[in-house]
Length: 201
Image (cartoon, rainbow, N blue to C red; front, side, top):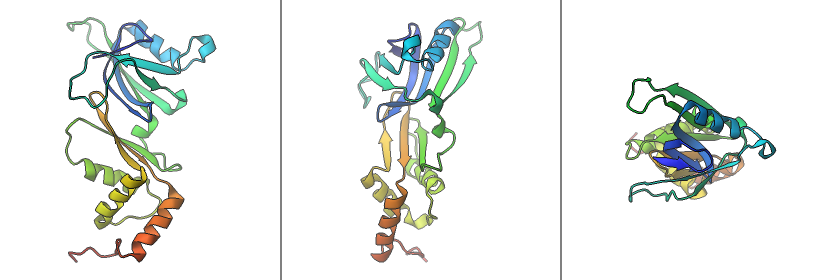
């Protein structure tokens, strides 16, 4: 479990960011601590609000991210959504509240800006296939299934598709630049890298 430096007695069992900004966090704590967290991330600094969280705590040696005073920016609170639940009072740890904080693009792609997030468990299979399906949803141009390898390689090279490791959960971030993609796809069609028929047909 990670600890949160800004709010006492809030613990985090899953966390992932994109370019330093919070995308998903799974947090546990007493009701008062969770309510403090939710209030402070929406308030301005002049009213005790916080624009950045920092996490620390024990993680496995295999973790790709080091969590020791690890800074996480909140950005605009309007971009975040939340889900809350409560553990049964009879559980071993008493009355605990569980809150998931996540960027709204986790649930619904931003089709205007061509952005989306795909959350993945560590070691989860079929990552490329799931990412490709999401790319086809977000892209403003129709993409044929047999273009997958060429298009995914292009998007990785351009930084439009990237993997973000986290604690307990990982992330694939998609951000397509429309104008540049139009140019690149035209080039790839002219060079024969993208064809209307697959090789097996």
